[in-house]
Each structure stands twice: as structure tokens, then as C-alpha cells.
Length: 364
Image: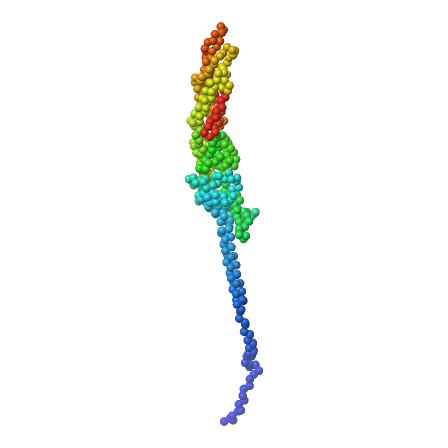
């Protein structure tokens, strides 16, 4: 048997893996000090402030985009016109008129049937280069759709942070009414108006009134002596025919009032003892006054008023008769009764002062 060999213990190669080197642990940080009550309070306040700022920022953005936006102002303006709240519309957009000229921009003018616009809404708002806004709206008048516009512009601020918007060109329209000089007055949508309420014109010409979009019924204010003639009240629309023609005529009461005053003046003339009563429409020519005496006049046929012009305030009559009775001295110096008839035609003028009619006679 072979002899046993000596066993040599294995050696470790230089390339053999060595155990990992573990660095020494870092020394533990010293334990921090607890926050004081003041520090905790500061942190809480800071968090609250940040939260409040965030909430205010959101609220500002919402309010600026809704309540204080040009859209909101435009919507309120259009809604006021549509509901007939013209006085609220005036508050939103100053009509820029004298107070008397605003009479048809009041709620009373919106109370007649179908007076106001309907189905009104803002359809768009466009920015202009100067910073203003062009507002497009649509509404209906008498069943017909209307597209319209008005402008808005910033005018300062509200609560120091919100931009304020103002309507700079209100939705004002014009209607024109032709009148006679004798027209005592007008009613438009039940509102009594006169020359002072128009932006231009006078009775006897065209009167121009400022109004909001809608329909307007125009009638003459009738009195005891003057009534409306023609077809009566007219209706105009700001979307259609905006011109109304009115005319007036004398009532029977005016004819009678002129006649009564004329008759009274003729009786005063008839009381004269002159052959040519001054200011009277009848007379008698005498070629030698010393041959006539004891003249008396009487109206044997009264002239009747048959024509009245309200515009000029003039009237004319049919023919009448006045008779003079007198004595005439003959060539033998005796006095003989005689008479003479003169034809009467009267034209003159009249004025109306309340319930009183004044007449001035002329003759021809």
C-alpha cells in the first residue's frame, strides 16, 4: 500500500473575497427642542393667512367674473328694459337728457299693452381697442326680432378692487309726432306730454321724443273746444314706422262759443247811435250829416259762423243783415222816417283761454 502522504492545509488566495468593511455609525443627532407655544401660534396664523388669501383670491375671481363683470351690468340693463323698469334702466345708464325730456323714460310709459320689448338677451360682448365693450343684444317688438347694440366702458372701481362698468350709449330711440298749432297736448302711452318734453320741435310742427325700444300709442289731449280728427290715435314702433301724424278740429262747443261772443259784440254795435259804429261790421253812408237824425240799429239777421281755422285762430261767417232806422230832412225841412239795410259779413280771430273764448271782429 502506498504510504500515506502528508496533508497540507489549504491556503487563502490574495484574490479571495474579504468580509465587507462596515463604517462606524454616525453619532446620533442631538434631540431637538420642542416648539414653543408662540411658535405654534405663528405657524397656525401663517397657515390661516395663506388659506384666507387663497379663499379671497377665489372669491375675487368669481365676483369679478360675475357680479362686477360687464356681462352682469349688460344683463341687468337689458332685463330692466324688458320688464318695463325704466327707472332702474336710468340708474344703470344715464340717458343724458334734461329732466323734462325724460318723461317717457319712466315706468308709467311702459304700462300700456305690448309697450316693452320681450325675449331680450345679451348675445355677445366684444372688446374695442379703446378698452370699451360693444354689447350685442336681441329682443322682440310686436313679434319681430330686432338686433341692437350699445357700448360700455370702465368708469373707476367699486370697493377699490373691482372695476366698475357703465353703459355709455344707452338704448335710446326717437319717435316723431306731427301736430297742429292748436293741439292742446298729447298723450303717449298714457303719459301727458307737451313741447317741453320733446328734444326738438313745437306744436304746429314735428315734435321729437326720446324713448326706449318698444311700441307707443299717441293720442291728442282733447278739451271742451278741441277734439282729435282723422283716424284717431296712432301707434308707432321703434322698430318700424316711427312717425305719427295727428290733427285736430273744433268741437260744436267751440263754434257755439264763438257764435255767442260774436252775437254779443254785434248787439253792442247795434246799441250805437252812430251811422258808422266804430269797430263794427255795418254802417250807413250819409252825404250830409245835418240831414239825418235819430238813427237806431238792429240786427235783423245774425251772421253765422261757418268756418274755423284752428291753426291760424281765424273764423268767418255767412251773411247777415243790420237795419238802420232814422229820420231824413226833406227839402221843405220836414222830417220823414226812413230805413236802410246793410249786409254783414264778419271774419275775425279767436283765442282760447281755459274755458273762455275771446273773439276779435274784422270786417270786409
